[in-house]
Amino acid sequence: MWREARSCHDHGFPESTERALESLARRAGPAISNAIRFTEAREHAELDSLTGLHNRRLFYEFLAREIARAQRYERFVSVIVFDLDDFKRINDRIGHLGGDAVLTDVAGQMRGVVRATDIACRVGGDEFAVILPESGRDDAELLADRIALSIRSIRVEKIGPLKISAGVAEVRADDTATELFKRADQALYRAKKAGKARVVAS
Image (cartoon, rainbow, N blue to C red; front, side, top):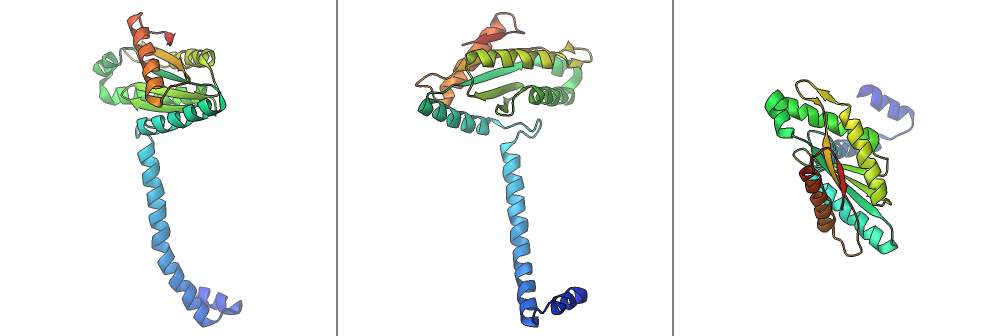
């Protein structure tokens, strides 16, 4: 402190200014710490704790925003919804901690495939979603195929290569976020019913 005070005097700061600056620093310190903690808490609340992807709440916020933009400017937006085939069997074979590790690996592969403009999310359990701004259904199908191929490269002991089923939907003029997601999720259900390990477009 003596060295700091001396430095201030050397630069011509009067003692009263020094005291005022020190008082300001003491008051500002806790405020800055609180702001940092608030920012960190908000980030944790918006990210899935396991995978680091955007969570379900943010998925719907982003999707509603992109739909509004697409409808206003007559542009495209599409959604991919996918999950792991037979994920319960994976948990049964390698345990829930092993299952969590698989979900983390899936998220990593997903990040490596999606474009910088795409929004990757975990919407619950082993279900993931990608929002594709400025993209139609054909582009979404191609990306879903690339995601499936990338995830298939993950090989799990006692399981083998991972496989996913995916549903794809493109925004319609009167869609809400809930309706668009529902159509993609229904397409995912049809992919499961048709034998899994495939992409179905709505």
